[in-house]
Length: 82
Image (cartoon, rainbow, N blue to C red; front, side, top):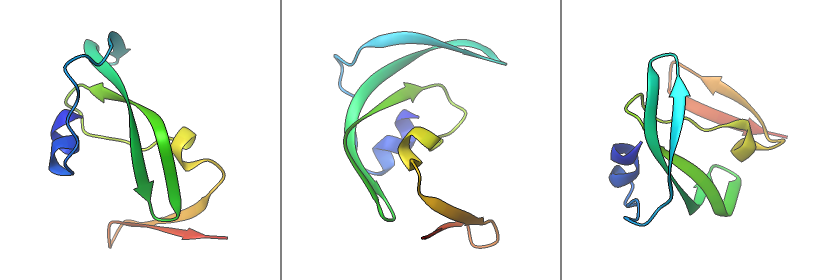
């Protein structure tokens, strides 16, 4: 969501395309933009993201690709391995 992006210094451009997303709680407006981002060993340039809603943020399989990882819930970490 936009608040999470602002925390890491990314601003949603005013001219970012607007569309509608739907979920269990109803429909809401989202904006689409391309970013450069890195998570552990994964680096993506011009990666499209959708920003909107208030339910938090998620990283999808389209970003993770074929990387293998485990989730350490006690330490709130993702651990990547070969």
